[in-house]
Amino acid sequence: MAKILIKNARTAKGDELVKTDILIEDGLIAEVGLEISADGSCEVIEANGKLLAPGFIDVHVHLREPGFEYKETIRTGTRAAAMGGYTTIFAMPNTKPCPDNEEVLGMLIDKCRTDALIKVGFYSSITMGENGSELVDFRAMMDAGAVGFTDDGKGIQEAGLMYEAMAAAKEAGGIIAAHCEDESMLFGGYVHDGEYARKNGHKGIMSLVEDLQIMRDAALSEKTGARYHICHMSTKEGVEILRRSKAKGANVSGEASPHHLLLTDMDIKEHGNWKMNPPLRSAEDMSALIEGINDGTIECIATDHAPHGAEEKERGLEKSAFGIVGLETAFPLLYTYLVLKGKLKLEKLLYLMTEGPAKLFGLKQGVLSKGAPADLVLIDLEEEWTIDTERFESKGKNTPFGGWDVKARIDTVVCDGKIVNIGGNLNG
Ligand SMILES: NC(=O)N[C@@H](CC(=O)O)C(=O)O
Ligand SMILES: [Zn+2]
Ligand SMILES: [Zn+2]
Image (tube, rainbow, N blue to C red; front, side, top):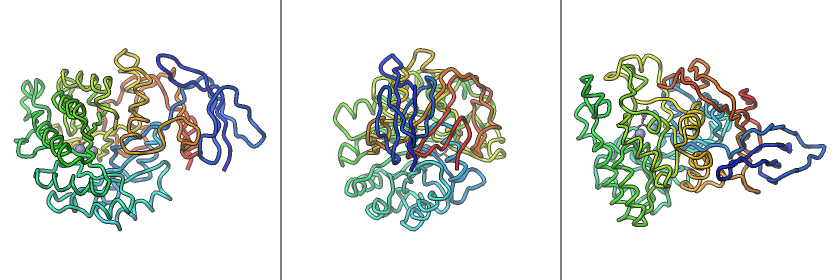
């Protein structure tokens, strides 16, 4: 495999950008430092001061394959990921069929050999077909290569079932990633139960819908010792429960999604692109999430990339499908609207998109150190552009961020030492 030398890049260290070169050999990082010299066999990339970071890791992506290929496929979803600077993504199991057995999981892992541009891990569901009643074989799914267990799209309604799932996950050495939603508390809601819903006559989803399961599950994780991760956190109370549970030494973690860090219910427009689960919440909730990523309570940013067909999002707030896409816009949005606004340090943002998730899920990528997989991204921090959904590689154009002006463009992406994106041109 070719050797690649990236010259004159800069990495984020504290408040500074520090000049560095990096040498890649046999798919691994061979050397990081100043003035690395090229030998004849080296492909040299001149970075011209661009930001160098570990390739991004997104532990919450909907690739929709099998069963919903009109929304997204492994191919289009990983192309979108490579455009967004990602080199590892984890796919959610709310597909048809669902990876609740070794055959479907094995088929998906195999398919990635031909169809995926970057690394993909697959979650097993917690229950058979996400039916909410019958547990999968946790040990068998771990042995078949599952990265964790989730019934994302739905909450586990029965405390007893979640208790058994955690006990089984603990036994098998797996992690439970939970979509927290108590359906008995929904009362037909579809946007946050707050000012926007009240003023516009919409049915609201209370924060309690999420918080009740976070409370329950934190207690169950403390009891069972199971490794527990909260998906797409959206409420201030949820952040506080996680903070307290971590302080007690529990094995719990959480992720926040860009839209919950950047938008509130008062930003909602009367279109399906502003509808997702959990919903955009209040300004206090958004502030608490930003505080949570800053103080280390939340260690990971995940997009919850949820592509849908155009028609499924054109039925207004009440009738549209829940979910928005996120892979191609996450870094530029967070850099422009959190880092450049002084709400989050660049080094921290990168941590939340690389080393943070890598540590939570036990991955060896996510760091720029010798011997680590050569998963890298080069970012032009100066380039200004406008988000145009028509240019997305994703089949899903459903985002509230279309037309937003951003700064920072993903320039080059290297995955396992292979260039998969160069200047926005995908390779493979
Ligand atoms: N987030 C969403 O609004 N939708 C997700 C499901 C989920 O992540 O819960 C989807 O699969 O479309
Ligand atoms: Zn979910
Ligand atoms: Zn999801």
